[in-house]
Length: 119
Image (cartoon, rainbow, N blue to C red; front, side, top):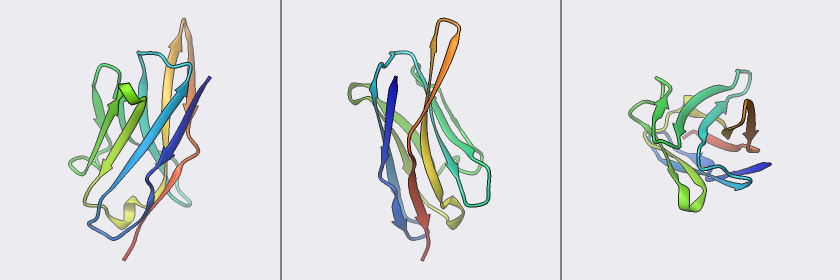
């Protein structure tokens, strides 16, 4: 079992910055695939950014150049640095961790943290 706890959300003005954190605990593997997803009211959940234990990253076109995903393996923590925030970035942001055990894939989700971009 893996537990994920996000923090760092809040209210910020357009153009501002926030850093989200996701702390993982439980049965952790050194090999992982993690990511941030977001869901705005009335919309489907969408991928924001992903990172692998090998350091490869991927971003949604809408956040490229503004958001940066990173991890600190010593702290079992994943971050999402969000700069130049826009009102359309308003959503509940959730972290995700996927692990592979043999041929079985396990997906774990955090409870989410609200990000509101408004003046």
